[in-house]
Length: 291
Image (tube, rainbow, N blue to C red; front, side, top):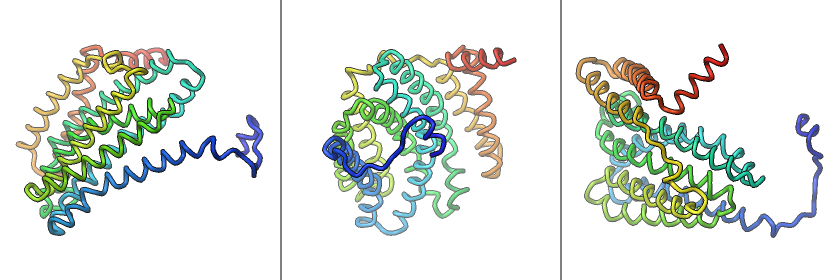
């Protein structure tokens, strides 16, 4: 507050135009409510149609998925004010450049995270919840696939639709995704249990991603921002091989997980450097400049 007073004049106002902001606020509020329904519907429907053990299995995989998702989304959240500022000042070229960097940077982090979590899902479940929840591994792997759709959808929602004042499209996307999630859950859970709840999330996240990309197409075209990351592709393949070898030859859930993460991070980084990925080259150039 003290620092802000040096740049702006802060005072209380008791008369202001509610109509100017109320519509956007209510749309964002409705989106938030829809997201909560969407996130919790799977567990709720599981509770109606299955037993508490099945709910517990899905809760384990869902919590792990949420932790990884929020960790990746934290990278995006801190950039939203910058994107909004650039768009608000009509600096469209700078806005698109920053969006492209954020999008591709998240892809470079997201794909190895997804691949690694799929390969180490058994160890992660055992470490967090124990042997009795080992059946949660399959639903966790399905949710790992949903992670891709979720993060890309989040990028276009918070990076394009919200800064450009297209909140209504964000609301439409959320409501439709929530409806799809609920319908898919009712249709599939009776047969496949917690795996069906995870599949319903994948379907909903994929639908939300497609809608957000579609409603952003006149501002950001996916083909214009998507880069070919050969180093990342090769790196992910190597991660699969390394994690498979670790799972086979190293016993102990904690030790094998730590070894797999360290080796995977190192080899993935090396692949980015060998294939001269733009982000790795930028990072190396900055290190050279500082030296």
